[in-house]
Image (cartoon, rainbow, N blue to C red):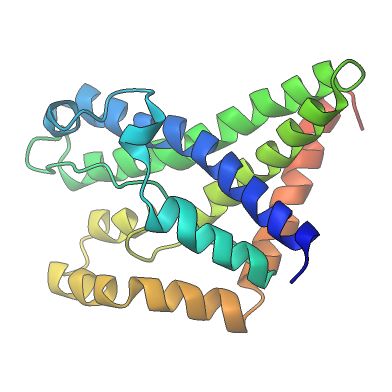
Length: 208
C-alpha cells in the first residue's frame, strides 16, 4: 500500500459521498410520488448529504475495497419504504428501487458534460468530474446486483420470490458481495462496462 493507492481510495470515498445524495433522494422522491410518506417522515426527501450517509457502506467498505483493487463496494443509507402504501405495491417498490441507478446514469451524463466544459480552464475539476462520472455508472451497475441490501434485490420481491427466501439471502448479503468481488471477475467486468459507458458519454459531447 502506498500514498497513491490511499489517495485514490479517499477520492473514491469523496466521490461516493457526492453521488449518494441524488441516488438516495431519488428513491425517497419516487416513493413519495407513489403515495408512501415514510421517506418524508424520516427526513429523506432532501438533498442534504448527511441525511443519506451510511458510515459502513459510504465510507469504510468503499475505502477498504478500493485499496483491494478489482472491485468497489459502496451504498448510502437505505431509504425505508412501505410497500402497502406504495401505488402498485411490490411493483411500485421496484420503481422506487430503480430510481437510484437511473439517477446515477443521469448524474454521470451531467458530470461528463462538466468535465468537457472545464477541461481547459480547470483541468483538476475536469479530471475529478470524469472520474465521478465513471464511478456513478459503476455504482449504477453495482446497485443492480440482486443481492440485499442493493437496489436490484427489490426486483426479486417484485418477482414475488418468498419473503422468507429474501430474508435468508439478506442475512448473507454482505458476505456474498465481498466474496463475489474478491474471487470473481465481477468487479473487473463492471469497471470495464462503466469505463465504456463513460467513453460513450464523452463521445456524445464530441470529446472522443
